[in-house]
Image 1: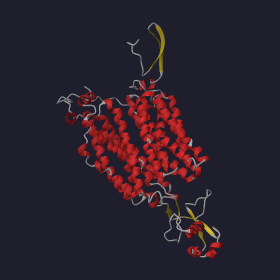
Image 2: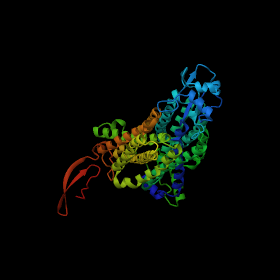
Image 3: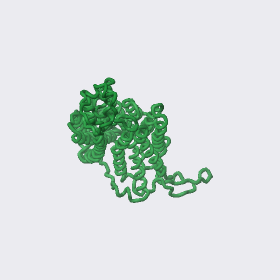
Image 4: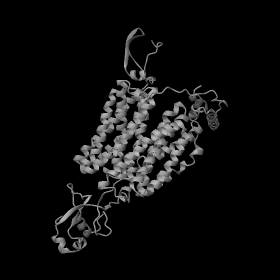
Length: 565
């Protein structure tokens, strides 16, 4: 008897699994809270140099006199905006006296007898945020690159966490890995709210990234292992829905608080519900059996059956073992030109999907209302994921993924026209195109995962999936730098450039998929040889049906049975 047969007897998705599965979905909600939170925490409000010798200087103009002093002190750039990193220092230090003297105001020429110096203090606009970590610690001008570095290190933590938590869940168990990870997440999430400087802040964000996403992967695996085979397709997708709910909830929290520290404390407090998880969620019976701990697995299965109202043998796992499959290595993935090329194409697609997904979100504040744009980009994930569920088994993995990549890429590329020719008039259209890009990338995430699982043989399937996930993290790590590039350029070009880069990458990745074979309704490859031959035309044979000769192509992975002939 196989373990899936036991799950069918116990109940594939009974009352017990529903309760536990709901608990396992909540960490996915927490993942949505933190995977994008640096967009808010490290957002850079509009700013300029603080005027020396002027008490209580603010970004907003207080009165005509204040406006005059700003004009005297802050130079303008080529676009007509105030310089952010330099100011005029005049030979006299009596700036306030000059400001109060009508004679000097009349005869004063801006910039004459003055030197241009770098700022050491700044004032920030507070209409969108009361305070962000960036504005509190003045991570602007020469230090602006630290914002992108911190975001990159956060996603590096995600990558490291995926590797460490994946290894730990196989060695010490799913339950203990999840519980330790969630506890570390709570501690780090509270601690980062009082991080005194950028180094400690970045270290804590690295820990948050690793524990947050690593726990998410473990709960995903645990949820899949507790549910019967016919329900796994839906349970995996529902957990991603909770991720999207977390994004929306996060936006609401930041909208009402407008303060990075208050918001971080609220998000951390939302995770306190995970503390009793050690007593609420079970270990995976499948994993326990693989470790020879059959008695513990049997106890969980008996409890599961009791809650579900089903009956199973008291010794249901006595003679049950899980067959250990021979696994391949990364070298096996590169053994043939065909497998290597397919791996390169899919890894590039993983990176392109992640670059689009995170990049468009990071860029939300540059194309209009910050909170509205981010809220919309959270909401559109629902139709994106649902459309994939409805269509991927009808039109195929290859076509669905290609459509998502091309739709998102072309939408983002089109922003160059809306921004260049009518920046303000067509801003709603620019936002709509960016939102379409986010929705398409959400759908593409589901597609590329399924595509990768089905295209590579069993012996190296996890290797291929792990490689794709690593390249996805590369996409999320470099996305902030493209957004920063656009901000540094400024103007219409700076607004459109990141979206154009994300769109072009998506289109190229989508076109590369034309080389890949379709996997819909195909038998999954088991061996390396199966993987190499998957989708190739092996031979052509003549089949006689009803007295009529029909030429059919026998494709590896979709073979014609002898009985059918």
